[in-house]
Image (cartoon, rainbow, N blue to C red; front, side, top):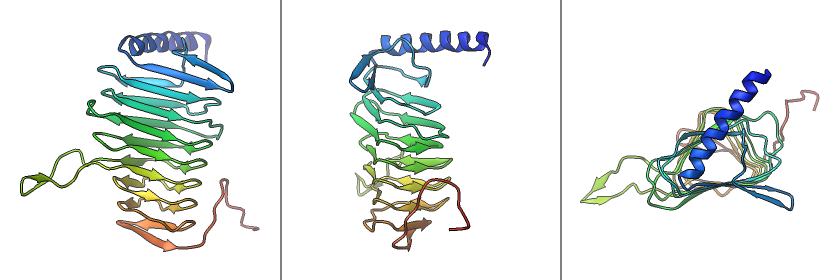
Length: 226
């Protein structure tokens, strides 16, 4: 990046941060024993839309994500623990309703290629340590539009919980009330819409189900000599 482009990016970033703070939002950077509240520079952040305050962003460094976008109406806590995994990409966090307090938690050492987290209404998202997500992954805690039966809403939002050391394949969708256990693998293009409790399993399909058991996986390319 040339000096001029870097200067322009820094200037744009500072302007976005000023607008972000003036709206009543906050950023906390934690690096070892050091804590920085509302830093003057935060190049990893892209602010798409913050109509009002109530967003608290907690980042534990080292922080390796290339882009973090917020499209949020407030009342949201986002905590991302230490991450040094490369390559890493883009996280986009969406929230269309701001009257309920929500949270997104991403555990230590997790790598994400490109994912959208939608925490509209009452749903929260919790991701354990050492998880890997590929490209085009969607986590959605709500159906967006209400469905009524006998005058009552039957599709309320619910939490998504992902255990430790979980691998989620490209273009997988994780829907409300889903729970994925430690060591699991979610197949590419799968739609998970339920709670699973078998650790070290492969969950795949639409709707997803357990297709393999007693598996282990590790980051890195396949070595066919193994």
